[in-house]
Image (cartoon, rainbow, N blue to C red; front, side):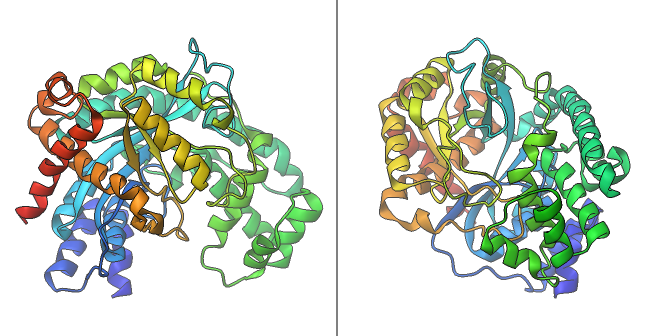
Length: 425
């Protein structure tokens, strides 16, 4: 079984889907008993993840999710495979993409927004992309992917300047691009670069004490007891991913090159989202204390200027705010949910899956205070279904806004459209 499951990560997309269809046909893949779990933020190998779209959908299904959403950086190219895998599994799916936008010429231009590495640049998500618009979004991202790679190459140069004295160098094409789906329309992120660096560090210094000594004594990287214990384990199957987390948290600032030409202006991106019928969502991060994902240092972000943030994103025309309940404190979540209600913004949630240690399930979503996020997921599904039929039927099209001016009423209506999909299975 494990041998065939591993083929869902094969390089050949057609083989991945064929193997999945055979596994399902023979009853080899079964879901855990679900509790109405949802996840709208699953990354795949089309940005950075241990999972192809087929494997991601399968893992989501086996974890007990009732619905799952793909969310890759600057890429929608894995969406059709994800949709087909969901169809084979009988798993309801949504598709979207995540990108960075420039907040220049807005009141947030000089703020550290939700991007740990740079002021004036914000992450936003496009949710519920109508299936008729996949090619159009893919074409939109293409020049930005090329611009991103020009910056990626500069960061590799910075790594080589820093690490060549230790016998470590990276070749962008051989060591980084080869880890990605760039040739198939995927993006190359900072995580690809740091993962390639992690593999090189392990090849030179080995796992366990050798790697830890290099990090602590040579690079001066502080390690928590938990992280050190994980990196001491030479049999740790996720070693390179765990080392990547250390690199991203403590070394990224030393090699980072500011993003500029690869980040479309926020107004342009919002206008494009409306044009293709996608839901534009600001991704709330919030001040970070102890990082849940292990790859972020303690840092302040939007919490000191939340009123300005929500006023700005509302005026810019964002449709929604997306956030992750497991990442934030109860106080942060109460503030964000209250402001979403105040500004009539759609609320979307999902767990940011890009590492093999992460669970596809967000246990917090079972708490009654987050039940609206389950409802909003089914409304998102309803939107995607209706907008795929006709863009004018989407949740944020003019007709829906007029008929249901209050977002909670609109969620209720589109939730019904989403649940119709289940009723027909």
